[in-house]
Image (cartoon, rainbow, N blue to C red; front, top):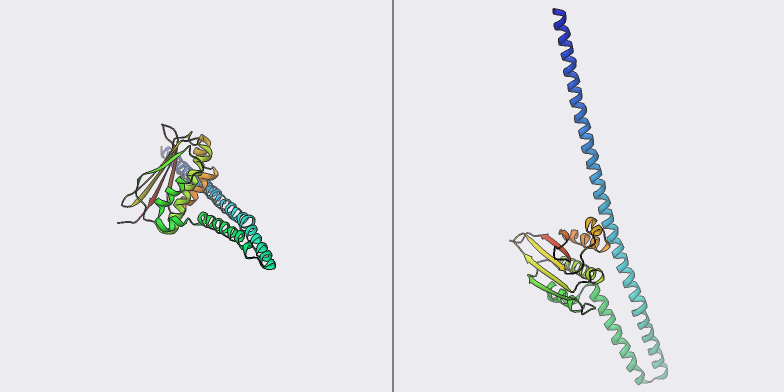
Length: 255
């Protein structure tokens, strides 16, 4: 009888140990899977951040290349022409030859102003974001789209953040012009106590499903990257009525 009790105790002890080992094994396995999932999530985040960084760098390089070409081909050629005409006028000592040179100078000044406007719109610096966006909408290269501001409260942002927000709206507008086949753009801005909410929408064909799912189109990546620079959260979606819509929420500390 005593031997059976001892045997039962041994079997029970072994059973408990096996259960303990099983629990430890499954806990370790669970932790390993959690760690693997965390690593995968981090890898996805890193990949996404790298894609956004690449998109930003690509956008910056494209902008630098465009400005460099503009300066070289337009401004450089104009200045060379002015210099040549001045040399001719000096050699011939004819004052009347200065008239076309003055015309070239005026044209060059306009080009320089245009390039300066693209880099930092003067109207944004002088009159604020609302006037700058109104000017952007007014100068759209088509009359087929009506763009307007509704319920707009000019956000209290510093100059740099205002420029970034202007570039975001410019990017969204260009996206509508290129891809949406829309006839209307609506933009609103509301400033609450602790956040600024920007809503952009058009009545076009909306974002393609694959682009909307990953938000990996170059234009959307540029928007997301710029939005991150001012701490804004972005939400891209298609409305039930049709059209592409973007919400930007910028946290603030305004009392």
